[in-house]
Image (cartoon, rainbow, N blue to C red):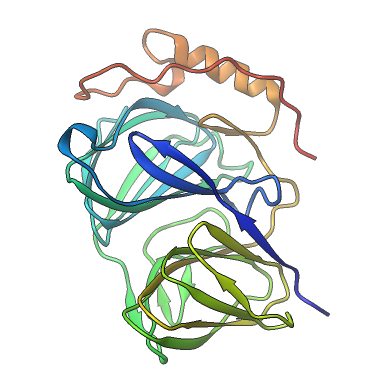
Length: 301
């Protein structure tokens, strides 16, 4: 049986003054496992007056997952957390019932991946929390790739970052020519998200060799037991994976839910002076981001 492979073009945009490429959600593919949002920010060098500055904004029903490659960002949230995220570290903020946070770059140079993980029904109303992971397991693979296990288990290493659904996130970097065949969980769907360089991807069960460049997410469906990654020069990518969701969640603005009616309730909460269920972010100088008008939404099916 052949494995489904799709090439998904990212949307180009701007978040807090930094150029970004957004691979998920996309009309062609809304999720990869529980990964429901994937931004690649930078790499960019910005003058001090144009550093990333994202004012307080709310989240529900998800965990935000920030993987810092270069630079420093200050995180503040309505729980009172205040944490600098540095290169090689992960911030995991589980919004659950509701949380608000802000993000400010402390460096001119910045390069990071910002991802969202949709929470399953049993966890999406849980109390919010924030966790910082200063060290993550790393391993050198045969063939020239260096792997950092961001979440889940890979190559005999397990990340300390928790998840509520079976999930995989690995940063793979090569300083020069590299080639390795990676063993995959065939029950997962996967995405290869290129950050820098150029890579040839050969999924088992797929006849073609796919050349992937930055701005493209290569989706690999379930049933794939291995993938070969080959590059000729310095390259970095994310390998994302997880069990497919029976039905994609409903995403709008900064909220992850199930029903359109929920979005109206959450939007109204954020317009309250005290932030409603989301609370207030102390220490940030500047206004919070206002909620846009809720459009006509349909329950995903």
